[in-house]
Image 1 (spheres, rainbow, N blue to C red):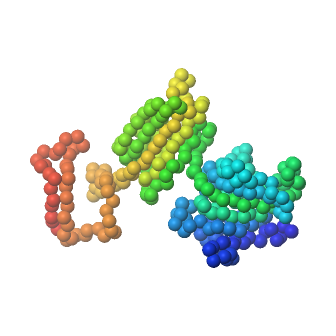
Image 2: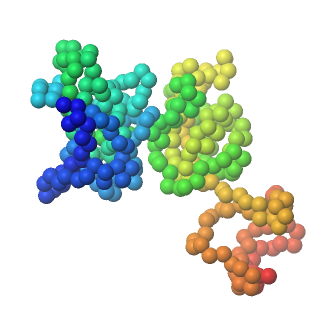
Image 3: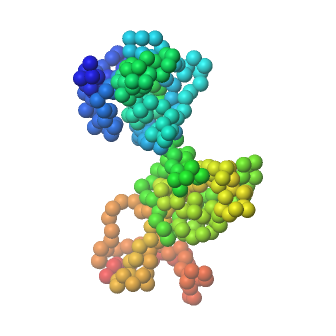
Length: 320
């Protein structure tokens, strides 16, 4: 009965036994809502310590173990039989798996094990999957989410796929024209280094990297401070018709730091620009008459030290 299938519930298994929770509690933690026709029962919760990793989303490459069977029927497929995890891209076009598996994966956390009851319209519908799945079959999938990679098609043509290797720990993404510190390495299909930079101060958008510049700027604009990512170039990726060095090459990027710049001039004429090299602690700012201690490490015109400055110096004075 589809009305019964439409009832959404959430159960979790702990060391003390099976405990039933309101599904709304799971939704309040950010889990996507499953549509009518799919129900979920959590068999093993993911540890709270890894909740901050979040859940996979459309476009991510997930790796799972799964057992598929007919409702009240025989097992159809089991990835553990050969101890070979199964990987697929969520919401891939053309689709790699049934709709129900896409939707199920997006509700899970890494290491979680859950059982999903999937109505025919989210499984194999009226066609079935001969010879094991008859038409109109309701499926039961037990899924363990082993891992996932956040992926993005940079140009929408499949020729440059960015994968997040390590999520950033910062809250800032750079903008065009903003200065950053990055590490970059590009290797060809044979592992030969084509270009490499370490701890490079770079203005986002500058065409410093030649044929790689478009991929670099597109990647950086979507990265957070501390993030590491790779870009896999396709076999037909070529900046020019004769330059095939970058076909099937790999670009490694790490965004070490994003510099915040701000116009602090009295008339906002950009005559005095503040560039934050290290964020301060606390939220208090000095006011007029406040006593401050200021350490000046260096003073220059951008290339040479200012005449008369012999720093570093520490100054103490009252504002105003």
